Length: 188
Image (cartoon, rainbow, N blue to C red; front, side):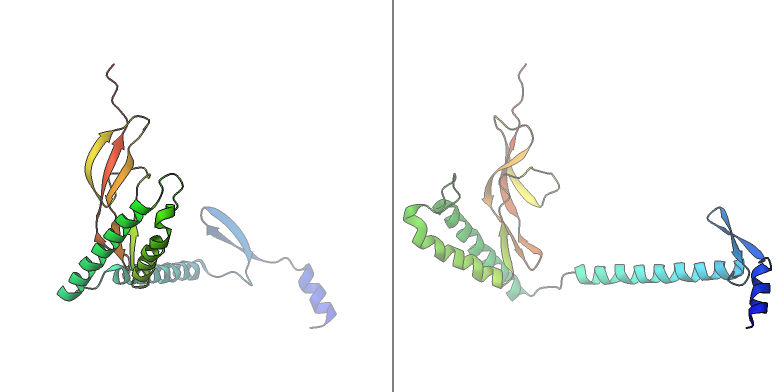
């Protein structure tokens, strides 16, 4: 394009098209403006695409979250694994000093074998959780054996674990059993 034509285009006022976007009218040069109908169709198409992708994501999440059914043999194996984890946890609790959370001097040699049991279970996807000391919420997947008024508690807290929760590959295979401490009732 010659310099003269370019200067003439620069002097020529550009025609603009007003386009409403979310309640605000934007003025866009006609050379780059799209028709309002085109914009509406493009917005609908984009919205539909996003909704389809979101739906596919939800369907995929539901499929991934649904656990596979287990056979009677697997169920028996899982009960045995939960029993091993529970008894190893009970042995570990008796070996550990409550103040330091370290094994007592007389139990240090045996303690490492208990840790090896937990490592082997973890390699198979079996883990345990001891919720003692955590705040209690009625929605937790725990069986409360009793609620005990406990001096010094200002809210409900898991005071003691009787049986830990055992999880296999994200699936609860044994519900924990706990004692929940509650604030003492005022007799005023």
